[in-house]
Image (cartoon, rainbow, N blue to C red; front, side, top):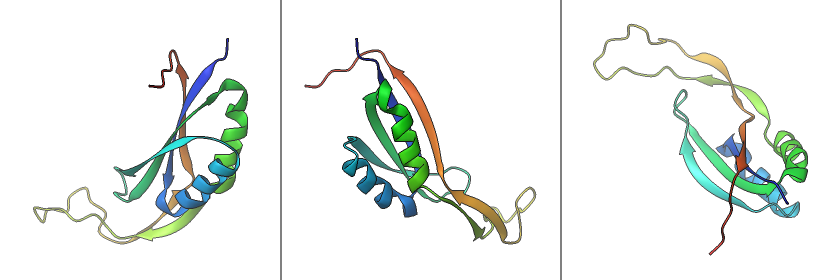
Length: 112
């Protein structure tokens, strides 16, 4: 019996094209979704990738190699009611990029 995994990889938009090309070259089939991060409210891309369990380590390394983290200065988030209690009021440097990856077991797969 072949064990399948579903990998959800959330990457920064700047890394998505490079990762998509690498996935195609390595014969991984993926669905690409436009998503938005909740913390920085910036654009992300989420890849849904189904693969055999035996290829998971290869896929994780591919994601790691093509999704680099970097430092970026972010502007503060504005409050709609002009109340800035609890909000950062000056630009801050944060680490962005890289990838957040979830590896899930697949109980059943159907293709119609």
